[in-house]
Length: 300
Image 1 (cartoon, rainbow, N blue to C red):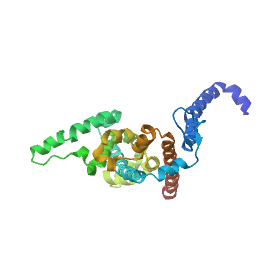
Image 2 (image 1 turned 30 degrees about the horizontal axis):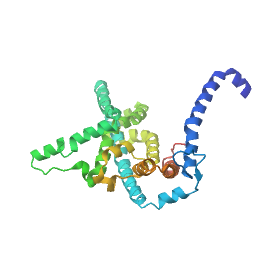
Image 3 (image 1 turned 180 degrees about the vertical axis):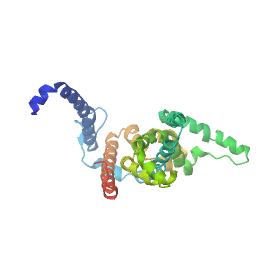
């Protein structure tokens, strides 16, 4: 069928498609273009991006030569690696545990309970964490009752990343099971029956059937996690960190917020964003290549 005939026959669908494409071009790709242009210009208040002075790579040099950038990058990588290591596998384990529950009603109750924290804002989560781990919180009250010296969890630099990652696990582990749970529902039940006939127990069935069948979804999740390895939850860190933990809590996002917005250096913030985007793209392509080489599966 020629394009003219297809247009005459499906003109309503083409109009819908045009509206969708116009939306993405205007609110996504055009804004990306503006952000890239801003990274190479010196944008100031009172001037548009088009009117701003072209400075080339001066903004990138300012970022690289900043006395604070090395510490912020180190903190970002330390926090991102901890988050990747400790938040990637719990949803997989929890999904397998939920899937193996025999009672459908009990399974639905457990799923609902573990999904609920995802819908809490970070403000609410911080309030819960503060009520438990602050100097007068539940944990220190409990420690005092057993004769242990109170610990200031939220102002201890050595415990800051633990607080961040721990609250991320509690908030997101249930929601993260949805993708893996959907993958397991597509596994052929005959594979489990064959394993039972061969005498395989629950752990063995999980190892030889469930995990291999989940591998494409696990590969996809890992690639997406690597893509956002430089992107920590800005709202969470901004709520949790304080002057006592700046040495370990000041990450790229908070540095951009402080320098780019509070100090009105918008172009510097855009330069950092562009650098993060390029690094994330390289990580995604590399992770996809490695995944295809090792497992034969990838995102594309």
